[in-house]
Length: 356
Image 1 (cartoon, rainbow, N blue to C red):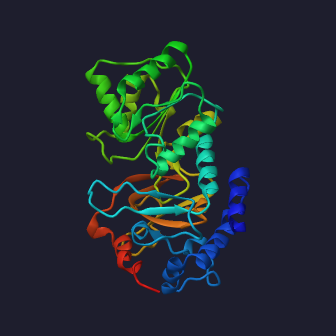
Image 2: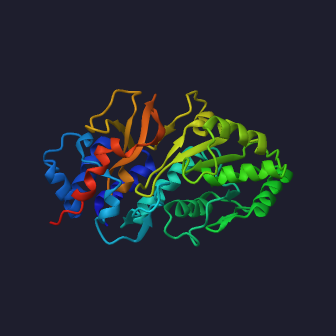
Image 3: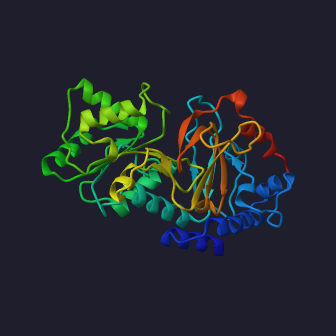
C-alpha cells in the first residue's frame, strides 16, 4: 500500500505525527489516485502544487459517497451508511482499500477516550455483531473493541432483529454481584429502549464504580426524544453509572476516526473542562457557513467539516450534513441541516455524476 498510509499508521501508533505536514501528502495521494476526486478539485482550481494549507483541501460532501466510489485502490471492505430518518434514499458506500488504518484509528480512539484507565473489561454490546451486520462500520469497530479491550463476560445482547433484554439484564446482574466493572456500548436509540424497558419492568442496578457507557447515533431511530441531560440522569437512576463515565461517540461510516466526549479522559488525566466532543490528534474539525463554506467565528453554528488522516485511502476531508459549533478546544453537534439550507452539501450530487 502507499507509503503515506504507513506514515499515518506511525502517527496513530506514536501520537507523534505532524498533522500540518502530513495532510498535504495525504491530499496529494488522493488527488493522484482517485480520479473523481481529482476532477472535483480541478474544477475548484486546487491541486497539490497550489495548496498552501490543509484548510484549502476541497471537502467531499457526504452525498458524494452515494454517487461514486472514492478509494485509491480496490477496497478490502465496503461499509454502507444507514441512511437518515427521512428514509428511502440511496445509501452511501465507503470502500476502504487499507483496513489497517480504520482498525488502528478505532482502537486508538477507544483507548484514548473510553478506556484510558483500563486495559480490558467486559463489554456488553447493544450493537449487533459484525457477523450479523457485515455492512456496518460501527459493528466492525465494536468487534475490534471486543478483541482488543474486551474481557471474559463480554457479550452481544442485540441483533438486527432487536434487543435481548433478558440477556442484557443477566450480564449487568453478573457485574452487580461480582463487583467487576463493565462497559455498555450502544446506539442512543437502543439505550432509550433499554431504559424504557427497565422503567416498565421496575428493573434497576447498582453497578460497581468504574462501569461506563458509550452511546452513539444521535436521535436516529430513537423511540422518543430525550435530552443529553435527561439521558445522563436516566443512566444514573437505572444503572448507577455517573455522568463522568458516560461518553457520547460521534462518528459516521464515511470516516475512519471517531470523536468522543472528553469526560473519562479528563477525569483520568485530572483535567477539568466542559463536556465536549474531541478527536484524536490525527483529526481536525472546522465549522463552515452552509451557504459560502467559509469558516464561521468560534461558537457560531455551521456545517461540521471533518478532516481525518486515517481516511488516507478515501477522503481526507468530509463535509457532513450536521450542524454544530465549536466549544473551547472541541465541538458540539446541534442537529441535521434543513434541505433549503444545505447548499454546500446538495449542490454536489449532480457534480459527482459528471463523466470524465
